[in-house]
Length: 249
Ligand code: NAP
Image (cartoon, rainbow, N blue to C red; front, side, top):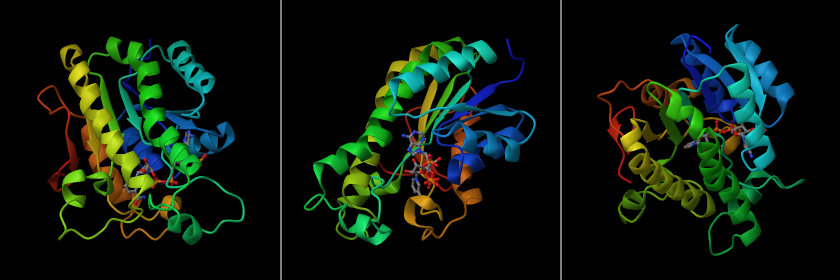
């Protein structure tokens, strides 16, 4: 079995996931970059350092998920931390601009196909990958799961009329609210096994997800997910937070 703790970060070939991978590598973990494109994952792994590898992982593809779990077991024999980072804000439609996509996010106009596509990655993908990695996480001395949530999915904030409407308030924000619900459910189920499951809100960050309109850097965004990935035995479970503290569900 691999000596060092191992982390799998989904969707880590770019954006916040890649930064989380880099930061956790600096903290001494062996990093597995989950990437839809193995080539892009291998390229990203090189930028992380010597102790990073890539695995093909599409979180919407059951065969790909099972293959990644088998690869981790066979190659490394352990998984200590799972970061469910892979996410989309919109379906990938050829010849559609970001603004056109954003305009169809509100639920009054969103197509159900698009809502399903967003939920496939942001919601069902999180459940599927967590289930597949469960046997490995159970064997880890201190299993940790970090889901990348968002204040855009905060029911408390968004039902306050005084709170400014979040960006992509519709299909995307609903998917993030669902990812928060998943966090609470997994945390409750995992508690007796000592596995901590928390959600991090990275803040509005400049990445492909929002056509690089976010105001935060990936370095800032990775801070809270990394902290939650490294929680010690006294750390919380079933929480949503950013680097300033708890974020309301
Ligand atoms: P990003 O740069 O677009 O990165 C998203 C990553 O997810 C990419 O690696 C992408 O891979 C991957 N991905 C998409 N669909 C996938 C699938 N089916 N299977 C596996 N990987 C898939 O966006 P980001 O901002 O870093 O987003 C990372 C996470 O942060 C997401 O969960 C997002 O919802 C969350 N978040 C972002 C912000 C923000 O302001 N940026 C705010 C709050 C929360 P490809 O390269 O193959 O597309």
